Amino acid sequence: MLYGNGDICEGQWRDGKPNGNGLFLHAGGVVIREGEFRDGLLHGKGKILGCNGPGTIYQGDFQKVRSSAVDVLYTIL
Image (cartoon, rainbow, N blue to C red; front, side, top):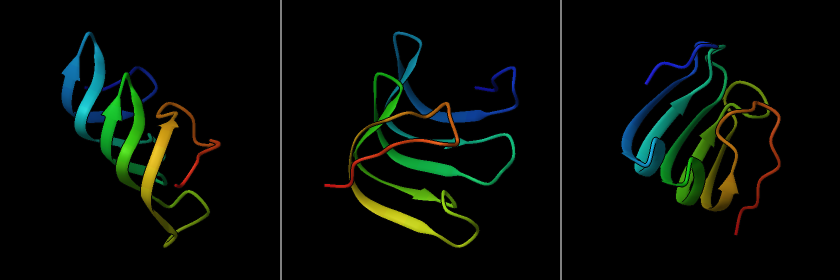
């Protein structure tokens, strides 16, 4: 799915939101989230690439990470 702001989300969907395995790319191309989504949020196993600059990777278990904002608060279990 291509959002109006240029963000792209691919993967499994339910009720109009990412649910299951997927990938979310921000329009600027800087931050990529991939893994398990629940109700549109990164939740479960996954990784976030580029959130603190090029080359940074956070990988692990996440709890409800927003997919629609570059500046996010996230929890790595």
